[in-house]
Amino acid sequence: MKAAILVKPGDLRFDDIAQPLPLAGEVRIKLKATGICGSDVHFFKGDRPLAKPTIIGHEGLGMIDMLGEGARSLQLGQRVVIEPNIPCFACSQCLQGRGNICSNKRVIGLTENGCFAEYICVPAAFCHPVPDTVSDADAVTVEPLAVAYHALFKTHAKPGDTIAVVGLGAIGLLLTQLAIALGYRVIVTELMENKRQMAIDMGAMATDANSKADGIASYWLRMGVMAVFECSGVAEVASLVTDCAPRCSQIVLLGLSEKLASFQPLKLAREGIDLIGSIIYQHPFDFKRVLYLVEKGVIHPGKIISQNMAFENIRQAFELALQGSHSKIVIQIS
Picture 1 (spheres, rainbow, N blue to C red):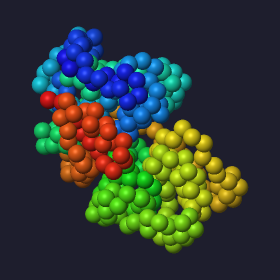
Picture 2 (picture 1 turned 90 degrees about the vertical axis):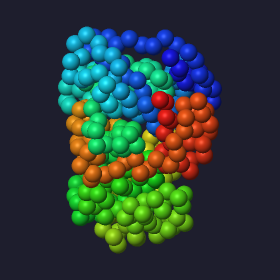
Picture 3 (picture 1 turned 180 degrees about the horizontal axis):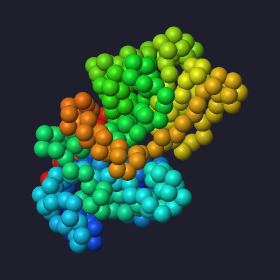
């Protein structure tokens, strides 16, 4: 099969390798499409170096074409999306129901080969059937939608309340779309005009792109912001968010910056501000919930796709993704 292997930062090569065979409890998927995630871009840039050459990619959509022994919950030809983070179910985190932070979890496209390939084998429990009424575009964006869904419900904010979303990459845009669809009021902050306009078209309000910290803080306070979601992944922005968050609000960190941010502990303690981390999702509930919302037409996550590109053009796709102007690039594999 054809696979795109990241050999080292910036060096993404096609190779012909053997098709994988499913182990007991696994299924083999013939991949149709895979989205490029921000983490894939970080691997490509070398910000997060891989331990060895790896087929990256984890936002996979495809059709089941082989069943391993005991994989009876799925059927040949069934269209599925892949849940790429696989907890161990035995560590202390898993036993507390927090498999999303399992220290032993397998991660498709990181600790093992991923979805920028023609075939992949995945445990059947981590393949979610896609209803016939759901488009491929909506299906291939379910994985990042689950990330946004998981974060939204970590706060006390409820429909009818006002939240702020800072940074409109794929997660920020999906969080914005989901929150608006569920009845929240959303204020966005984003420097890139095309992404900011996309959020406004969804129904969001926007801060002035050139607003200073004092202006953002006063606007959030005036609008009654109850939760702020930091989605940029930039340490300086995380610092800005902690400076600007209103009294008694909650800050949710989705951006995955590895650099140090700063905040004033006195402000957080004195003003009753909660700082919350959010990463990926809980198996299997968040995937099932967002698939239901997509099936019912509550949200159409595929609207954030800004470019579809052929598998043979995957290197050019990553060069485009590096520019930062695209909201979501999807590679069409078959």
